Image (cartoon, rainbow, N blue to C red; front, side, top):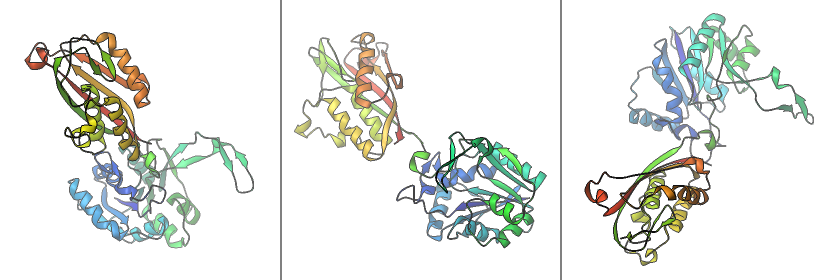
Length: 370
């Protein structure tokens, strides 16, 4: 039987003010996403999370919010450094445990395949670790700069797996701090090690950019027509026999896009940001309003990765203007035209849209952390 130790005692010094383990990731947070794949393995009879006591309640609340109820999950105190967090957790191993997995709580993208391969390797050779090849050139800077052949080096990932007694023997002898468990075991209880393939996706979250989890948002807007000489859609003027009834210039597509961006970053919609009773926005240029919204996203550390806009209108005829719209948005959003999708469709003459009384627009957006 296996026990699992999740190391969750890091200080997140390079991540920022918040604890990276509780940063949003996937459906939950970094720590829970690192834990969840192991819950599917019945051979794992106990899961010990080594966590700082000040974060214990936050972890338990996160479990509750994620509706994870599993009696195998237990807590142990972290140590001043990773090695001592593992030492504390080892005291909580169950009596029926024969092998131990140790996984970084900051590795939320581990796969079931890696876990299974490590478990099999540990059963076969008493130790197993996932490794990946290095893609960057490698130098040693201990005494000047000395180039090394990366061919002979690998990066170590987790989970690592060990036969219980071998792991306990090594850690009982260990009095220093080490960055990984394989080093401890090979230094104090050397033996065979099964090497399994890691994955570049199985990275350890260190900085916010490592998450690269896109935010997504959706926006919708609709504006009626009045007599006029043209409309603006996505910053592009389209001559026609009507214009929008609107507080600003009525660019319904940009309005939907702004709401999508604001929704993605957790802000209120444009009605709150640009109130209709505020005369500063009378006949305002929607391009300029969009810049304000983009600044809000930028202040939260996000930029637009791609957009998709769907315009619903019987008229005017949109096709001649699609490329111009893309070029306008490419310049405004600082993204390639290839990352901009614009479609136009009719409402099949149904309702107000179908009778050419209005134009509606849906917009979706994805944002990435800078």
